[in-house]
Image 1 (cartoon, rainbow, N blue to C red):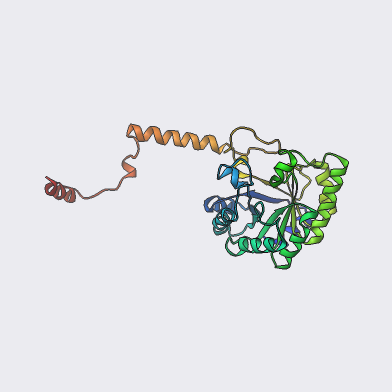
Image 2: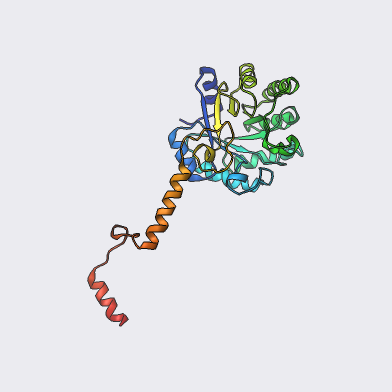
Length: 279
């Protein structure tokens, strides 16, 4: 059954946790969809995990449309959410609506996601009025990395915690269908989750949220170096891939691959005639 805005809301109301993972290509999206994940996020995190950028800021609308379209073709049942990249919605409300529309029309997304609280409520209202579902994003918003001075936990002081709660209520009033809560203390996420009637999706926000999202490369052990505290590695696919590539190199160099079972046969008669012609 196709996951929709309505089914995600029903999951919150019934206490059925929402599952979301990032994906950036057709093959990965198809696997996740077949596993039964409720939602797939084409995050602007693709800037780092797919394109090798230092952060999400260089990602363009063209990047997002390209990857969103690939994911949409592989996601039959998952609710597909596409990130609006940096400066695609901040300049004007009109830009926000036009760019959101491109992610729906050209990308095939079911909803768009944008970062920010009260300051983006006008954009949320306008996009929703254009019949496009909006997922909001509060807390550690990666597009604000320079303003934050790095990737830091948000909402630890009383004033900042109050703002998070206030922003959550405002984006809900503006028409957001869900909100991602990233990098905030679990107890604050619990308060927000209880105050909102729309679902909360946590990433580094504790298990009191209505659902969870992770970058799949982190979750499957494909990344190296620093692993954020909130990430659990559910598999070590990176090690498996490295072993497979190493075995391929070794067998190719030794001549063990391709073996007889990997080759196509031809009648000896054909070969004999061909060899005569080539003599």
